[in-house]
Amino acid sequence: MDTPARGAEDGVRASGEQRYPAEFTGTAGEYFRIWIVNLALTILTLGIYSAWAKVRKRRYFYAHTRIAGESFEYRGRPVAVLIGRLLALALLVFVILVGNLVPALSLESFSGKALFFAAAVLIGPWLLVRSSKFNAANSVYRNNRLSFFGTYGSCFSVVIRYVWLIFVGILYPYFKHRIVRYSAEHHAFGDSKFAVDDFKKPFIHAYAVAFGLGLLGAILVFVLFSLHAVAGEASAELLPVAIYAGFLALYAFVRARTTNALWNAVRIGPLRFECTMRARDYAWIYLTNVAAILAS
Image (cartoon, rainbow, N blue to C red; front, side, top):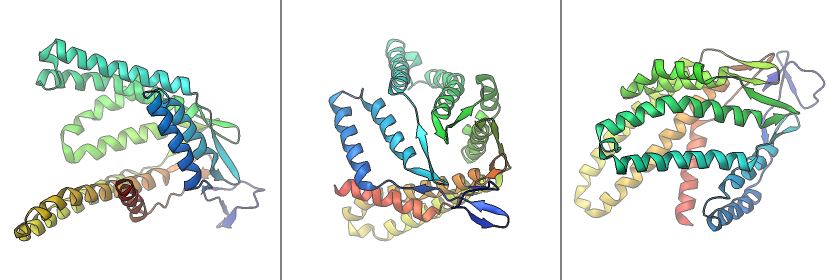
């Protein structure tokens, strides 16, 4: 993050600016102890402790993320998280019961899918606004809270105007871009609202490149497995692994590129962000984590 602020000794002056790299001071060993306890208690409490596990995990990551020598704080309450999850569970149970009691409204039927989609369009903006307000209000840096000032009405207007793009698969990135932009533009740090420059081109470009790479990869895999079909079942067993690995790599690519596109466009007053996440590093983390999970 770059800022013309004075008095910070660890800032690196460049072109009249001071640069403060984000630092993470946590370790794998520390987090493993938190994770294993969270997992055990979540299992023992049939999932109830998952709300406390989420808060505990976030507090650890926030406390070990530092900018200009100061760490972040997460002040969320586990009970509030639990209530949100119980509401989501109740909604899921309601949908299942309706589908069982009224077969015409089950998710397997066209009318049921249409009704579910309509409900998602109506409820989705409310969930986005409520979760954004909660997460922002409980994220603190230097005793200043983030805030989210979006409303259900403004969010719904964005969704209802662009949700049709979902039905045209290759246009989905445009819908995603509008939602991400809406969320960023309606955040503030203290009294300073986020200003967001145009980032549509690099955002959409990330999806376009991933689509092209995915198509080429699918063709390559099809050709290779067709040529080696004589190898028998061994080749067939490797096909899901190749597909899953390719999907993870493309997901990591899109996530890294779109994250860079967003944060490089965000400014808070005189402050601006600089995000330089490398897609190959992100993909390597995903792939090695999956391999470690499978091996252990």
